[in-house]
Length: 469
Ligand code: JFZ
Image (cartoon, rainbow, N blue to C red; front, side):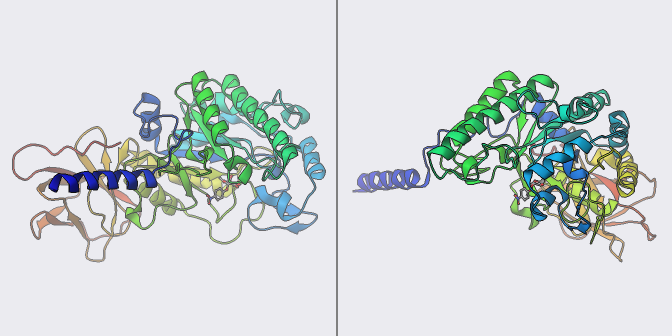
């Protein structure tokens, strides 16, 4: 009887499992948590610069004397501009002040370790001379290869380059939002070939690129391209095995995006955090790679001549970056250069302000990740991957000047010191494993870092962080 019950139980559970899990053939391509050196480098990099540049940088949110607030790269759609009229902009796209060496200098000043550059946004214009279309840099006065110049200058400055590429294409005659009939399917098959040709072209022209940030994949037509996008990812990784591709690229054969129909992440990291960070704090499992992308104004990626509303400050952005790192994520901060290739004053100020902080406190950011400690209101813990140090990155100093620490069971605090001051911190154990750090009663003008060391309470062994992904 007992045996029978077990048998019954087993067969029931098999049934439940197979009812829950679908047979996915076109899901993830690479292992879910990659541990190869390229992926580790991506993870160590933590802070990147996103660049949105293209024909939309010319009208910069204004059409026929009217300002359209909001995303300037969507102006064509907001102002209902015909594809022909929009395409005329290419004859005016002349970035005379584009000095990629200067850009890379700014990027280094700000302290980013990688950068992601728009090669083709939704309007379909290509910022490199593509073999597969005329709607590209060859048609502009300078005929410069903006992508190639960017890759070279940034790489020369020691910065990894990723390429943004939008599948959604408002210019290409074969683009379809959905596939309603035979004609649509035939056209979209041609369009898929175009995507494959161009992505292959980008990998071959710019062999040092580290990966792709693919966008514009939310329409029905692409959701029905699961097999195609799977095979394309396989093919690109044959050409360049270390490539890192974001989850937004993929849908499985059932149309599930980012995560396949069984909840398995597709692509090498999760790229669903668009102008938002994981919230509430603990919702993200810190055991997979992810990246948040962020704008400086509310929701504008390309250059807009009139930023409106709240503009994020350097400390606000640094806090977002730290929050990402504390949860094992990367932070990609967007900049929208003007059509002539120069940056807004506000952006240049951020290069400097963020850079000043990063160059002082970057040890608590780069190559750091989740510490496994309960979060406190003063800020975030980040654990250094290469040792047993945990950083407390402090953004909110309590009026009491007491910072609370609550360690996981069986751990004990052995030391706490400021990384950039020799001032003393008095440590007070309230209950077992819970401490108050008393810091000097003064004004704190910027976020700062306290380094703590933790040991096992039951022996003299040093506590090593749980292996981070
Ligand atoms: C897309 C683009 O439309 C936008 O112009 C910009 O390039 C940005 C990085 O990506 O915008 C999105 C993409 C995804 C979501 C929202 C806007 N989303 O997942 O909520």
